[in-house]
Structure formats: C-alpha cells, structure tokens
Amino acid sequence: MTGGVGVWVDRGGGAEAETAVHLSEASARQVAVRLVSLGGRHVDETSPCVDVRLGDGVRVHVVLPPLAVAGTALSIRVPRAESPSLLDLERRGFFDGGDLDSVTRCVTRRANVLVSGSGGAGKTTFLAALLSEAPASDRIVTIEDVAELRPRHPHVVALETRQPNLEGAGGVDLSRLVREALRMRPDRLVVGEVRGREIRDLLAALNTGHDGGAGTVHANGLDDVPARLEALGALAGLSVDALARQAVSAIDAVFHLERRGGHRRLADIGHLAVGPDGRLCARTGLRD
Image (cartoon, rainbow, N blue to C red; front, side, top):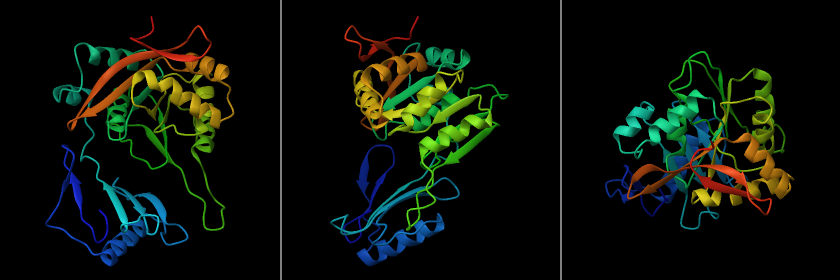
C-alpha cells in the first residue's frame, strides 16, 4: 500500500491492484502508525523505517515520506493459518523427483542446511516445514529479526532482535542472540535470515558440535551462494579462505528455492566445497 496512490494484494499469483480500497496519504499514515504501535514500536520522522510483528504473526513494514517518495509505504505480510508440512508442499508441486526424500534424509541425519532464494521464494515456509520433521525430543531455538518461523513442533524457543531506542541504547542484534542461544542447550540452532556479521557466530556454532542447524540467505541461484557468503563473511571480518573452510565444515547441504509465475519450488540441491583456487564454490547434489 502507498498512501494516496493505491493498494496491491498478492494472493499467490503476484501483486494485483485492489480497486475496492483506496486510502489517502493521511489515512495510510494513520493506519501505519497504529499498526506499528500495536507491535510495541514507534514510527515518525526520527524513525521513519520500522519492521514489527504483531501478536498473531502478522508482519508490518513501514517507510514514511520523504524516504517513501510517493507517500507512506505500508507492507503487511499475513502468515498462513497453519504452517504446511513437507507432504503438503509436495502435493503443491514444490518438489521434483526424489527431492523430498533427499530433504527428509538431511533432517534424519541431522545435517546442517542452508536455504537460499530470492525474496518471496518460500524460504521461511520451507524451513518451517523442514524443522517440523525434527524429533519431538529436540529443542529448536530460532533466531530472527522478526519472528516468522512457525514449525509444527512441540519444543520451539523463538528469539527476536530488538532495535535500539531513540538514544541508541537497548539494541540486541542477531549476532548477540546467536551467542545467547548457545547457552540454551539447543538441539537445533536456526537463524531465520543470515545477512550480516552473525554469519561468523553461526558458522562457529555449527562447527562446534551443534548439528541439525539451519539458516537462510538471499541468493539468485545455487552458484551465487558462495559469493553471497563471502560478502557476509567480509562484514564479519572473515577472510575468503577462512570463510570457505568454515562454511564447508559447517554446512552439509544447500537447498535453493525459486518462484516463477507465483509457483514456488525447490530448484536445486547442492553442497559447498573449496575450489582449486581456495575459494568457496557450490556443487550440485548432496555431499557423499
């Protein structure tokens, strides 16, 4: 929604204009401020960009003018009433051939997995379905900027970051939460979206006996995952060589998702390796 411009709704086939609803800029801003306040946050000219989660899992993102040039930009993501299982995804055509068996085997053998894909490719949905297959005795600790993972599992501890206040105090980032999670005896440590220096803490954790973990990254294809990890590693002060060896040791499988024409699917299954030049590379298929 853009105040004074229009409203668009994505029902699974891409964004469509919703002509039955039109809000003026003043009304759109009022709705945005109200929704953000329900999430325990505040949005105004001093904090013009806010991302919050409402109690039932609805995610709200707001950008105010002048950053949003045309008018208040309000994005609302409504979660499904119930998280789908891997079998549900299979019935929707998410998997090809024996891909479901490969995914299930990774869960059973407690492989550390990385889920990649572009925005809206279904990374969170797929990861939640994958975690739902974990034994009921496992303690799953999830770490996210905005808590969205909702696996069907009896023992999930969800941690969520906190942005600093107007004085710049009180912030808790993903990297801090990864370190805190290690003190909570997790059987499976999960970072909903890796996009900064927390990559160092996650790889370190997965390299020290914490198997069955997972994370997601934005990438356009399986072959693009190494470059993405190198960029994140640079933010954490990791050299290319150090990142390559840490990632290969920590991550057992990479699942790349794509969305085309409103249809989401598992496009590639691969693993990470160190190439002849000593840099990280991706190869098709699960590691032997």
